[in-house]
Length: 390
Ligand SMILES: Cc1cc2nc3c(=O)[nH]c(=O)nc-3n(C[C@H](O)[C@H](O)[C@H](O)COP(=O)(O)OP(=O)(O)OC[C@H]3O[C@@H](n4cnc5c(N)ncnc54)[C@H](O)[C@@H]3O)c2cc1C
Picture 1 (tube, rainbow, N blue to C red):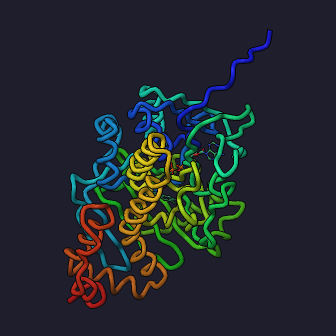
Picture 2 (cartoon, rainbow, N blue to C red):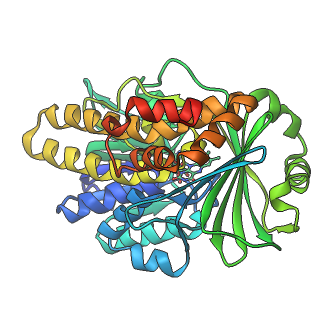
Picture 3 (spheres, rainbow, N blue to C red):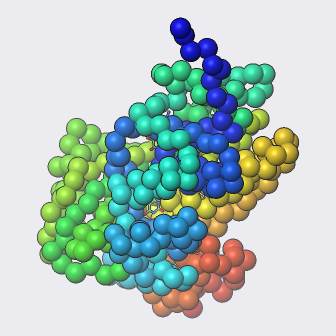
């Protein structure tokens, strides 16, 4: 006899089981919702990421009950340092500081927490389509059949298929790429995210363990062509030539590449679909805020979905879009300054020297970026300090 029971209709189906997806699922399950999470990879994979979690991201881990577990396998970060030529500017991170930690065990930590919260986690399931019922989605289609739900949440990352299928892709796609890997360093590691502005690329070094660092290169498409067919060899070559690693290092794993960014959406919702994390847009790896934005906006996304399930209208989604836009505006501030400097090495040297003289201005930029201060905290004298050091 066949099983003719109708398939279950979940309150929410979440596509993507990394930071944004797992955190949204945890919050929704905590609100008493039935949630199924679909993740295409069977085993946990490393991600292209700088792995520096800024203070507001660390606070989100605390809300999720995961900060002490994360601290056991991470290293504290006290601040950010910009390097351009001989100039070095340092800014302390407020709000208890950040942490440097590997994604290949942060992601499983979140997913395990989701399962413990009652989320049905299905690995090895790739979402391929968005079946409709009029303007609304019935759920998602996968190689293993349809999964039905009242709300669909796309948390499937930078190159989101859900965003594309829903017709929410933003117009322009950027031309920046990132490559990251772990190294064991022979010299000292300070508790700082170190960002080096070089001709044609930026180098990002974040401590993630004892004598271990994440090293990320950020570059534009033309420079990325040099890595075609020889990612590991060329990545290592760039690192060996860099003064920051002159005491020597060993590459601990294969470099991974991601891009192109920026990526955007026209808006982060349509009918009963919400986008969260990188799927809702990603500005640049240099901000060091993508993980925090994913975690903070996951809470806002879950709240919006929860209210929609009760109220049945789209007002919570409009409010979510506004909250997300404000969060992203702030977190992109430092990235915009950094990109402007990265594009002009001469300007970078002058500006970093100026920030060295005026660490308060640098600290303000970091504080705004990491949600510790409001954008309005920037005064004309800060812009003057950046431009002239006065
Ligand atoms: C070079 C670089 C450096 C960075 N450095 C930092 C940093 O130092 N600090 C920081 O905070 N952020 C950093 N970021 C940003 C950060 O990595 C991202 O913002 C973060 O990973 C976003 O998480 P997410 O959950 O939205 O997406 P992702 O981590 O990309 O997860 C998406 C998940 O969806 C799954 N998926 C995709 N398609 C499907 C499908 N069709 N069906 C089912 N599952 C699917 C994927 O397998 C994946 O697990 C950096 C990014 C780059 C590129």
